[in-house]
Length: 207
Image (tube, rainbow, N blue to C red):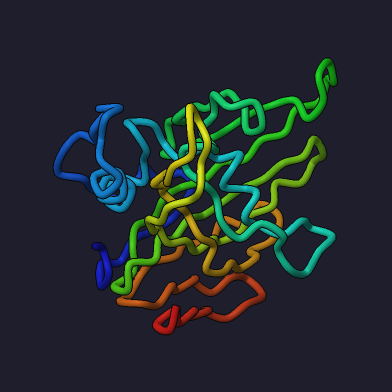
């Protein structure tokens, strides 16, 4: 966990989350091993969590409240039909997904995130940017938590299926092309003061 460590989040800086080992790529990982890898690296089976699926946990710009509040991580990888996207790791530490919303359409959508680390209570903090073909690049903070459970699943007979869930625990809109620095202090996300705004402190202790 990275609580208590100040993390600058200037998009021109390289990622500041340090890891001590390479993420596992073994497809036979147990559910608990998958949970540990997600918490340590924000990855699943050696691949970053799909940004297109991450974007589904944010409200539409036209809405005040979210629709989807959780994702089945295995079912939301970029090689699925529903969440297919071209995913790349950029030079500035952002994982970015690009896709065409409709087959043959000339415009493309993009969603990217930077994983900023975990608070003391285990929440993961993401800085997410979204573009839907226009000039705006809208930025939000997204707070998520991983958990394991099982579901009824029928393949060659009925049975329980263990699954890794990424659950939305909240978000905070930063606006169009926001470039303010932020850092983590315990269970608090701190957003630096802007030209017309004071410093903002988001206390997530109870989440």
